Length: 119
Image 1 (cartoon, helix red, strand yellow):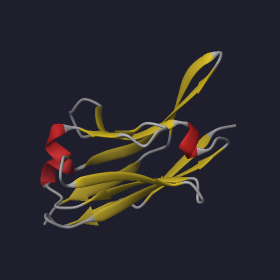
Image 2 (tube, rainbow, N blue to C red; image 1 turned 90 degrees about the vertical axis):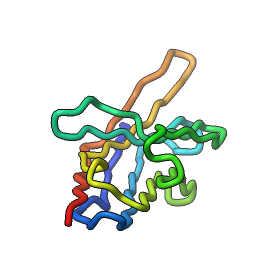
Image 3 (tube, rainbow, N blue to C red; image 1 turned 135 degrees about the vertical axis):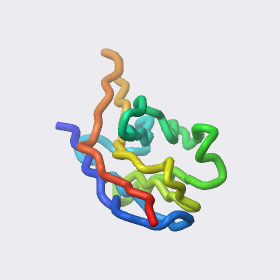
């Protein structure tokens, strides 16, 4: 059974930093595509950052240069380092893993962690 558990959210002032963690069980992170998405109040679900199983990364334009996705294969954990946080980054952040086998692909999501950027 695949499970994703996020942590690291909280309240931070504008310009501050947070690191989100996503502990994965049931599959290994280095064999799968992983990513982070967010959903702010009244906003659509947005894919913030993604990493392929090969390690390639992509980011939404508004977070480029501020956010970094990474993974620790030994800990089977995916991270999102967020620097220079802005009020518009306030959202619930969800970890995602896409597991692909010969039978097809399945997307898994964590329960979400709240990030609030406010002074």
